[in-house]
Length: 102
Image (cartoon, rainbow, N blue to C red):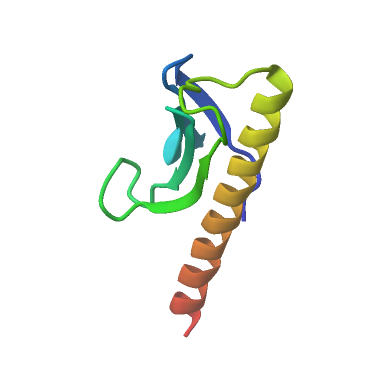
């Protein structure tokens, strides 16, 4: 099980986006564009049709939002996204472990 994700910011605004990595392996993609925040779990380490959307949030009355308004807002949302990625990854690891045992 894991609980440490490193975020690599690939764009600062319009969109503000990040790769989420564990041990240099990509496991997620976080993006804020046009007031729409998404966080995807990438089971194959790249963007694909098998991605699992964990966060799909539209900021009300802020359709042009392309970056977080403050460091506090950024930290809050990135923490929420990384917690969901960790939960999904740990579930996947547990699932695979149970398959191997049985």
